[in-house]
Amino acid sequence: MSTDDSFSPSKLGTKEHWDNVYESELSTFKETGDEGEIWFGEEIVEKMCDWVVEHISTSQKPRILDVGSGNGNLLFSLSAAGYDNASLVGIDYSMDAVHLAQSIASRRSIEGMKFACVDFLQDGSTLPAPTSSESREIHESGKPSNSSRGKWDLVLDKGTYDAIALSERKDGDTPPLRVYASRIGELVLPGGFFMITSCNFTEEELLSAFQRPEYGLLFHSRIEHRTLTFGGVQGSTYTTVAFQKSGDARSESKTVN
Ligand SMILES: C[S@@+](CC[C@H](N)C(=O)[O-])C[C@H]1O[C@@H](n2cnc3c(N)ncnc32)[C@H](O)[C@@H]1O
Image (tube, rainbow, N blue to C red; front, side, top):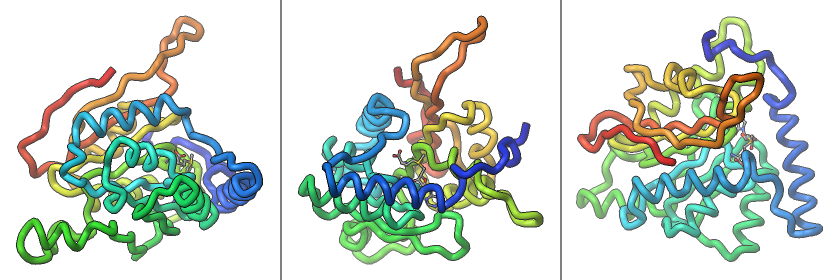
């Protein structure tokens, strides 16, 4: 089955749904300090973070974008792991998700991280640059470099592609998942990474969606998750795959347990 038309639209694919979720989570956070749901649980966050630590040095001050960052939990873990806050950016199309992530950052005294309200699929939407961006581009080459501007060493997705898969498709328009994959391909720097965790797509489906010559993304590694056996069939509850953008000799394939 094609990954472009595998799912019927559902309310989980609407902005209205996520606006309601984060309106309620933001109000709970203000009342009780509860930071809201960690999608897929803390173990997945930990494993994604461990993968980043293993493959991308904190001293590089990598520019990291979390697409559909929700309450910001993945970026907060990366900050705790030593990544420079000024290089971490989260975007979400729900304004209350952005407010929630900003409020949590402020409550935890995390400074310099950016969260912005952006619809990733919107034509012409502009992504914020990390706070660190300009000084680093000047430092690298002696003058600002156009080739790396607006691109990222690492783009992350935890659950957002799954949500987009449930959004409505309009006849004649490019399917949302195709728009998403093409934008990811444009945003990753050569040698940089895209890592995605999904609860709806198998590794095979993610490879077929993202490992296309026009995006320049190649399978790099996977994170193994616990498996469930049901009716004699064994399956994993989540799939995490990392892709590396071609253009760098560092490419290698491996599995992280
Ligand atoms: C399943 S939640 C995951 C949230 C977050 N990644 C996490 O792990 O906690 C999906 C997120 O994607 C966001 N989202 C869905 N479609 C989006 C789009 N087109 N642009 C930006 N964010 C989007 C939703 O608002 C929601 O925060």
